[in-house]
Every structure is written in C-alpha cells, then in structure tokens.
Image (cartoon, rainbow, N blue to C red; front, side, top):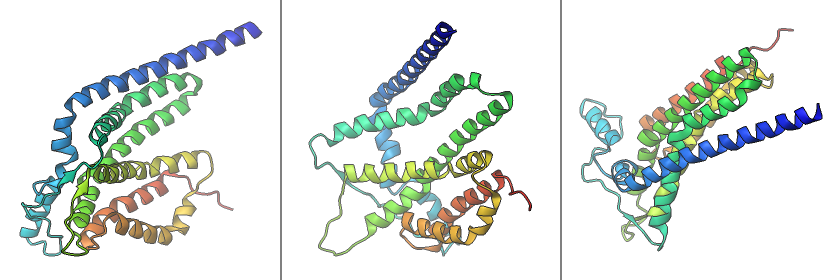
Length: 265
C-alpha cells in the first residue's frame, strides 16, 4: 500500500512537471513571436492613445458633432503625446517585459485549460461543470475588463493628464517608463475588477457570501464606485464618470445575482 501511495505521489509530481513545462513553453513561444513583432504592436496598439486619431477620440468627436454637447471635447486631430526615454536600458526592458506580459495574457485561456486538465480528474461531475463555467467566464470577463481599460479608461486618463497644465513655463513630455506604468496599472486593474462576479460566485458556493450583503451595502458600493470612477477618470465630466461607473456597478449587481440568498429564519 505504501509503495502504491508513493508511486501515485510521484506520478502526480511528474504530471505537474509536464504541465508546468507545457505552460512555460507556450508562454515562451508567444513571447518570442511578440518580441519580433513588438515595434509594430507598440506603434499601432500600445501607443495608439497618444495620437488624435485613436478610435475613442474619433467616436467622441462624431458623437459631439451629432449633438452630444455634454460629451468631452477630445476631437483635436493634432493631439499627440511625445514619449521620451531617460534611462539607458528602458527601451530594452520595456520591449522584454511587454512581450512577456502580452504572451501571458494571450496564453491565458490555454494556461487555464492546462490547469483544468490537471485538477479535473479529482472533481465530481457537478464540480466539473461549475469549475468549467467559472474558468470560461473568468477568462471572458478578464479580457472584457482589459478591453474597457484600454479603449476607454486609459485614453480618458491620458488625455486629462497630458492636457493638464500647472504653468505655461512647463513643457510636458512623458517618459516611456511612466507611460507604461500607467498603461499596465489601468488596463490590468480593469481586468482584475471585472473578475468580481466570479469571486462572488465562488464565495457564495462555499457559504461565505450571501445576496443580503449586496442589498445592505448597495449605497456604500455606489459611493465607492463613484470615487473609483473619479480617480480613474480625473476629467470630472459627467460622460466620463458615467462610462466608468455603469460597467463597474453592473458587475456589482451581477455579483449579487450569482450568490444565493440567505436562509430564512
């Protein structure tokens, strides 16, 4: 019996080793391909919000011309943000880290699939169904959050901060590392924020969260989300606040629907 248990243990260790090797290999292959294509990706995707022809700016300009006087005026085609490099190795390290981060993000569904294959034999059929859907929607929500962060929140924040002027004596230039730090923080933060319904569902499944929590603290949540929206989009205009507030609040309400009600006394 002891030999069988030891054999089973080392079998699992070997399966885990192969799993990690496949995951690392997938990320590395993608990272190498992205490293080669990174100059184009950076110019046309990462740095696209630095130019006045970015899709959000063009859409807002058309909406404002169509009668949306209350919308922010971001339609200046001459808008641009100049990025400078002030450290010797910054461009190389940004090239490397950006390639790696994008490789992990793109490989995320495959990495989840490998994890699922490893843990699924130990689950009951009902647990498999729930975990499968949790992986699927978790991945979907993560990509949706990053999309909102990239297309909406980061450009609005960039426009406000780039146009903000303390004094006319100061020439505004943005360092490469500062731009990338803000880009990572906002885009990845929104990806994590959009995972709230999945976290709520898991906590509800194990009995740590009930729907009454969302009902009791709804007003507090609204205030907190408004504060978060104001921090993420410091322009302060109603349109920007609304655009950020609505999807995050929708996540709160979706989370409430995914958790069970408390037992009636």
